Structures are given as C-alpha cells and as structure tokens.
Image 1 (cartoon, rainbow, N blue to C red):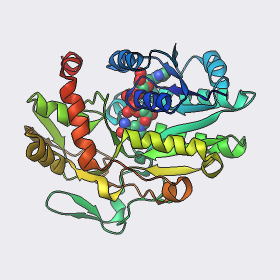
Image 2 (cartoon, protein in one colour):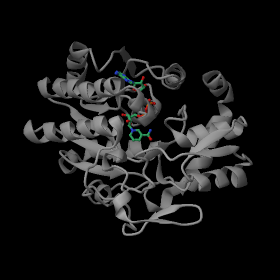
Image 3 (tube, rainbow, N blue to C red):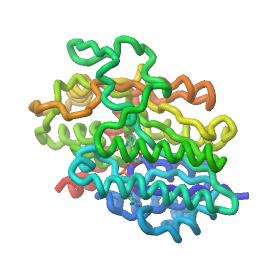
Image 4 (cartoon, rainbow, N blue to C red):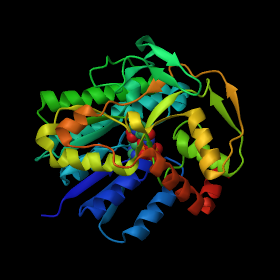
Length: 345
Ligand SMILES: NC(=O)c1ccc[n+]([C@@H]2O[C@H](COP(=O)([O-])OP(=O)(O)OC[C@H]3O[C@@H](n4cnc5c(N)ncnc54)[C@H](O)[C@@H]3O)[C@@H](O)[C@H]2O)c1
C-alpha cells in the first residue's frame, strides 16, 4: 500500500526538504502549514515544480484547527511535527505566542494522534536548547573556538534538562509531552533534539538559521552583528542527513518508539562563528563585515551532539561532511539570488 506522511510546518526549511526527500523515497506527502513564515511561498512553488503530483497541501494552524488535525493525521502512516515558533529572540518578545505555537500546537497534534483509529508514527523536532547554557560543564576558550573539556564525543541524551528562554521552555515542554504520550498512551512517538541544521531552501534571518543568514549577508556585503566573542561552536547537520534519520526511525520503529535522540553533525562537523567566517572568506571569496555586541543570555558557548545512540539504535550517522555541505548551501544561495533578494528586500 502507498505510504503517506503528513508534515506540519512542511512549507518551512526542514519541511520542504523532508517533503522532497520522502517523495523521492516513494511516499505521498501532505504539507500542513499556516504559511506564517516569510519565504514559504518560494518553497511551495519550488516543490510543486519539482513534484507536480504526490503532494497535497492543507492550510491549517496547529493552534486552532483540531478538527483538521484529527481528520488529516488519522489518514497518514507517519506525522513529522515541525510547525512552530522557531526563534529564541521572538520567544522573548512574545512568550505567549511562542507557548501557543509550540506547546498548545503540540498538544493538538498529540491529541489527533491519540484519537486516530490507528495512531500514526509521530516524530517531533525538538532542540539542543532543552539542555540550557551548559555553563557548568567546564568550557575552555581557545583562539577561535570554545571547547567542552569533559565531553570529547559531545553531549549525550542523559544530560540534565535545563530550559532557558521561553523558546527553550516551550520546546522542552513539547518534547516531554511527546515522550510522555508515547509512554502513557503507548503511542509510537520519537523526539529528535536537533542541533544546527543547514542546507538549501533556508531563508535564514538574524534570529534563526545563522549559517544561511551569514552566507547571504556576505554575498550581499551586508554588515552583521556577532553576539558574544564569535567563538561559539555548533555542530552542523545537513538537512538531507536529518531526513535520512527521520526515515530510519520510521523503518526501525521498534527501536525508536518512546525514545529521545540527540541529533547533530557531531564532533567532526562542528564550527565556530569565527571559523565559519574564515571559511567563507578563504574558500568562497566571501569576506564578512561584522562588529561585536553583548552575548545573548542563555546562549550555549558550545553544543556538539553525541550521536552514539542514533548510531547504535538506528544505524545512522551523518554522511555529508560539513566541508562538502557548506559549499552546497552556498551554491544554492548563489543560484537563487533573485528569490533571496526579494526575500531580504
Ligand atoms: N532549523 C534548525 O536548525 C532547527 C534546529 C532545532 C530544532 N528545529 C525545529 O525544527 C522545526 C522546523 O524548523 P525550520 O528551521 O524548518 O523552521 P521554519 O520556520 O522554516 O518552518 C516552520 C514552519 O512552520 C509553519 N508554522 C509556524 N507556526 C505554525 C502553526 N501555528 N501552524 C501551522 N504551521 C505553522 C511556518 O509557516 C513554517 O513553514 C521547528 O519546530 C524548530 O523548532 C530546527
């Protein structure tokens, strides 16, 4: 029988890449999105040109449209729940809206899954921010980056939860609800605590999607502000590898259900902001103009995901090295300068 997946927030960056990935893998895909994110119209146009059939679109809001969620989610084998408020800074300005999008929206999705005659598999995109600023872990400062002294393999899932910022709280609450619905109602739910995801079709802004944002800024000679020293480190995971992990979780649901996985590029695919700027300049002839401002509260100095659990349970590891993936992202930006100019105008 034809496999069907529904992607909430499917018109966004990860969602449109997941749509493309699952269609190429033989699935029918439904995108459910309220189209609130700027740039999603470009994504929808692109995906419909790539795949003129096998996509359905439902305009709906996970905060309010319970009946639509009930009907649509029950008609699919798997749900990828990506819809939500995605920026820390926005969450600080409007915590209620952040809560409604991320917590209420997730409860509505969970209720639709729980009430479905045959509950679909539910995958949730959580975040490494549920671990807080990690300041107590022993951080060393080197010339161009911070290091986590005692975690050479990165941060495992056993790290204590410590929600910072309204975004950290709302994603963390949703993360725990997803886990607990799996436990208490015996539903096939999975949580991925994602690090920094990068790739094509990302319209990064200062608040979110920093690699795309800095790359676009350097291409258009726009000065940017670096918050803190620029030595903050993130592990970067190409969105195609992330989609491979979602697929692996669905195919190995008995190993994945009820579980939480840290999900990132891992120690071999990490970069600091300053190192990323040097990469843009030296390898792509894209020098950055920047100044510094105060560090943002709650910002992690280093986050590197320990992917061991995903490797052991789901036989998954990132395949796209950052040194190959970064040029792919920059090529996409260069090939789409017209769209991007309109977006940033
Ligand atoms: N991109 C990353 O690096 C990253 C890292 C960790 C976690 N995540 C999580 O992954 C998910 C997807 O992130 P993204 O980078 O693709 O973000 P995005 O903003 O590009 O996509 C989110 C999509 O959700 C839609 N949306 C927002 N609120 C909605 C609502 N109430 N109802 C229906 N649709 C709604 C938006 O229109 C957009 O299309 C988010 O939940 C985010 O928290 C992303």
